[in-house]
Image 1 (cartoon, rainbow, N blue to C red):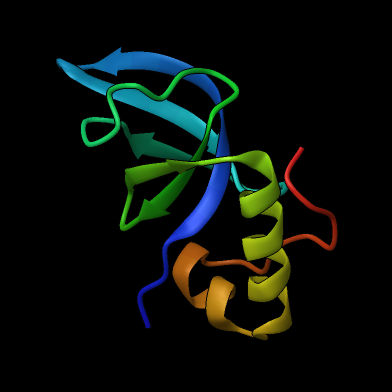
Image 2: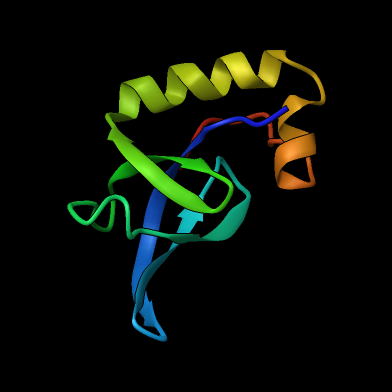
Length: 90
């Protein structure tokens, strides 16, 4: 199953010419490419699919989506390699 998972951008940096970010998925942090979302900035919430931020969402939508994903046991763990913590995005 492939999911788009919402997360909040913590920091942005350049990696060999690619705009990259550290994104927090409610306690899990991953490196994400921002080439598809050039308008995203630190503090923005993005939907991430296979390592790429594919769109921006507001904080309320990100929280709702993470709540639904937490209710789907195993779905997020399969995508991120570990389960989401019990709390919402920081």
